[in-house]
Amino acid sequence: MILPKFTGSREEQARCLAKAMVGMYYEEMEEARESGYVGGRTAGLEALERFRVQGYAGTRNNLKGNVSRLSFYIRHGVLGIREVAESVQKRLGKSYDAIKFWQELGWRQFWRHLYGLWGDGIYEDREAPKVPLGNGAEEELPAEIVEGRTGLVCMDETVRELVETGYIHNHARMWFASFVVHFRKLGWKAGERFFYRHLLDGDPASNALSWQWVASTFSHRAYLFNRENIQENGGKEWCERCTAKCPFDATYPELERRLFSK
Amino acid sequence: MKTGVWLHGDSLSKRDPALRNYPEARSVFVFDRPFLEKAGLSFKRIFFLYECAVEAAEEMRVGETVEEVVDWMKEQGVEKLAVTESPSPRWREMVERLRQKVEVKVVPAEGMVTVPEGYPVKRFTPFWKDLGREWS
Image (cartoon, rainbow over all chains, first blue to last red; front, side, top):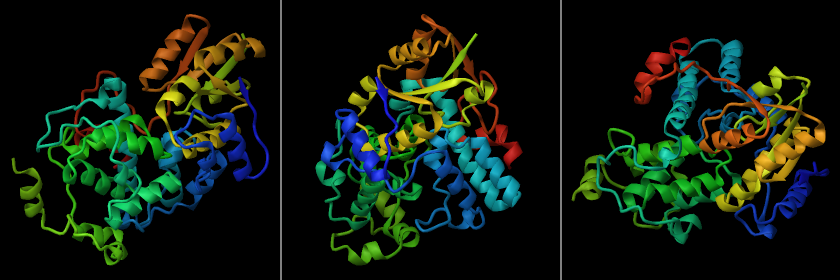
């Protein structure tokens, strides 16, 4: 069946598409909205031109840092991975910032290589976990988590941004994944599905294997974070608004004792 | 022999390697109904793909991908299909099914580095040390 190219504003086109493809997406038709991030190569090239790599290495872990936000264009081949790397080289030359950025692009190529080797095996534990995990039986994450109602402002705001925009910063992905897998002892597969549903850059290999990296089924150790890390890289405003008893307010040895003692 | 290009979700722009190999070719993108009905993706993802496909492909279709591509080829009078390679098992299965019906030329995807055939599984750090020298 031919799908027409709709005319009008993005909002109008989204309404037409939602009607044409009813039953093929997660939301109810009335709730279907476009993201603020615009698809297509024209928008991708504009975003690439805007990206300046200076400061990338020093600030990329911060939610307000100088990250490229090109991942959704690269994931769908709207921008070529080599094209992006060469654009940075051509415009801005080789620098410590550029090398760090290229290394992050390299991760994508790494995940792609493993996907070619393992296929759907990316959805199975690649190694025995290095720490005690939950039984992983959940099909979906609990409603309070996916609806942003845990009371933990940092996690609820992360979910809100993900669902509203289809994008969150990589560090926020790591915090959320660690919260799900280690603090809540839920299975990484349910978390993986939640991210895959919403991320505009949702890529089977990058997503599933990054969850496994956090869980320690494809890494040497489990990834943990604490309140200090959130405050340093996420800003203090989340914590200032939060009235919950913070499960992350501890040193790493304390957290390891609390979460990983059998 | 007239060639058409099938664009998919891993290579959805005018810069698609298959399209660059066949610049005169007509192109199609298919929203795979069986996959989407099962996957439960957010509408934002679907609309993002739509915006990419609007710019990249001459025609967009909805349905079972192999059937839609073959129908499209017949309608366009296209005899041979070119497509960019993907590591996805679903893509491989579709290419196998297409090959039972039409001639398919697979074009290598663009990489930042070349991973040699048979390169073993390693962690990222040794992988990048071995292969990422151009970018280090």
